[in-house]
Image (cartoon, rainbow, N blue to C red; front, side, top):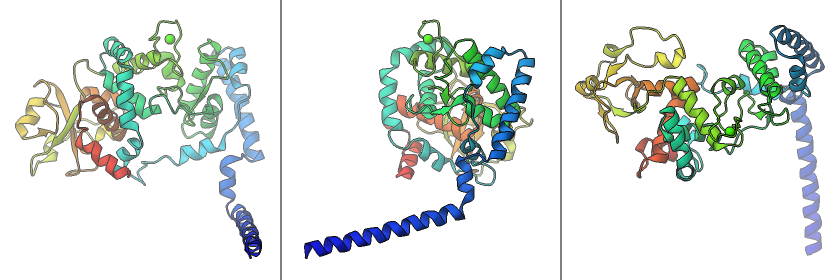
Length: 375
Ligand SMILES: [Ca+2]
């Protein structure tokens, strides 16, 4: 009896396997686009090789050492999945992301509790980075946490291949050609071996997720060994993040800002910015004009779980999801985070994570909302 049942089971499994094999075949036939995401066509490969030859010639003309080019471009290949990832980035105008959903995704898992432990465990190195840059240790740690989950997720793509693919694709050819040049310099000048050049599909690498040009201009040697190692040295990672934010306009002694309650029937048009921004245009267009903190206080704004800064600190109002759905008063230091990544949702998630990992309990309420949303 038991034997017969086992045979029947076997037959059923076999039938199931046949069906799934058949549906896999049908899927493969029905979805050539999915196959294209991972494999380049011969035409694409040929076009990429041609582009690479042109790049090599132009980079040499720009003054890059041909030996450095050979060393860096060795083994470079077109990566169609990089193009796929670049074309399906979230938060485009067609698919806006709500801040609570964005925050929930960023704070998923152990991002806060692990961050609290990492903030404590690295307090001496973070304090040194703060002293050197004027950027609070908690903000440096929060960038580290958002970018790579505190150094745990740095990306495994071959960096020169990802950069060459993005430059070849052409949507942001100028930017990625420049970054490929910088990657060539990193290898040529001995900052990293060719084999160590691993990073995200978008060309960012190490615990800071710097692009190669940021490494060359903002990388700092925090542990004094004469090298800048953003993959393995936490001291270098913290010093470099601090330097990057200070260069982007962080004001020492001026905190990022806070979540605020907006007075009833507040006239937003009365605080509209008078000039269009010249950098990071879309996110900065969502900021009101900068007004001293004392004026916001006089208008009836109230900080949530925070204190007002000095009266003359300039702040602007942002409401990421529109009026009545959560408001923040942010300083010029907040704007420096937009230099790291030009997105209000990104910058707000950094500042709220900084508060969540560094302030004594309880965790700020907006963070609890995001955590609840993640479950
Ligand atoms: Ca170092």
